[in-house]
Length: 559
Ligand code: TEU
Ligand code: CA
Image (tube, rainbow, N blue to C red; front, side, top):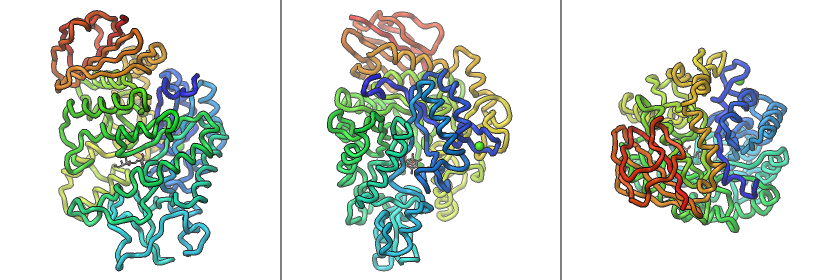
């Protein structure tokens, strides 16, 4: 494997709480992951990104860490973790851990000290400010609702939390804090992990003046992103981290970077001067957002998706590196949003898979995506667990008096629990996820949608992913080829062409449930079929052909 081994890898994301429960307490755990390593090996993935397994009071399911060097009791022991890592490495699978260092839990020992007194040695590990005329230090809103500031009586000051009040932001201005983070990273790297996915890493540097955000909505609190997204010292902090830690390991780093532009992407992932191996950005996920943002989901246009994807493909080619994903633990299921989770569930899941995996970048499969798991439609708010969802519901329904049904519909479309219902292993009770009571109910479609069934069916979405992963290993063009969008204005067909030395790859995907005529340039006739999701397909590309509902086909040409 080369120096940049992540470029020809496929990543599989595990959300441990929902993956597999080994001891019947209803919560997925580390031994549960170890039990399923052969399943991952069968799929053929190269890397696991494991969402946090550190000690945590679980205000945000592990994204609130109270000890960076210990494994969460509910998930098992360090010995279990070591066994899991060995099991992965024995199978040639690498492990990327989640590094959540924009904030910690308020139950972290650093914070317990920090809040005690203004002269505590840990005071400056967090961001404390006095009140402004009896109010919060500024008008920033938290991403999970309400103010981004929490008053703390002990010292009569406020601390900053961009997420929940149990997730105080760490103060990266403090060199001691930065050293602590480096030590945590070395601790895990020395245990053998192969890299980190860095949670909201481009939020770590705040403008030290913490100015009020411009008032753009009637709300009391405003989005303060101008003062912390890609903040003033972000790049320098990351350079320092690379110098002091990462350069000594051949580690893969994925920077989760909301609001990053392709220009940022080029700067941050440059092979010589960059700071991470690849970024994880959200522009294409936001294509369904209406003017009201994430809870205002609207019908989306394929031409809008094309513009975003094409911009990233073109601008990063030869200069930077991106993640390719349509799902993670914060997003709804892609087949429910971009495909069809009814009649064409299987066809559309395969279409999305081939369309995505044949683009340039490192593909990510989120657990259950390989089964075409779908969104879930609980009708009681009590069935939801996610802090973001529940806070939003309380604010909108209980405080502002909005309609329950309307808000529930928004949750059905975009709530994070869509991705967090337990992995569907079989048609047994609770989908074979647990013998106990699952922490979050399983999606009732598990009798139809489950791994056991998929593994027995050679035409399943699972084996389609397996084939895509295999193709990546066989054809360099998938990793290295350039990108050109064809049929730019078409609202149903997404067609692109890639080139690499003497090879050309054409991928045609129908994002609709209609039969659509595909007409291509005379020059693009012939080639040989690489993959498709319908059994009967022409083995050579024709200048005019019909694309059936959610059909995808890719052809390779040698010139
Ligand atoms: O998410 C960061 C983020 O900015 C959003 O995508 C967010 O998750 C949310 O859905 C806003 O609507 C990361 C993690 O992936 C997420 O699970 C955590 O809750 C968050 O950071 C805080 O650690
Ligand atoms: Ca368990």
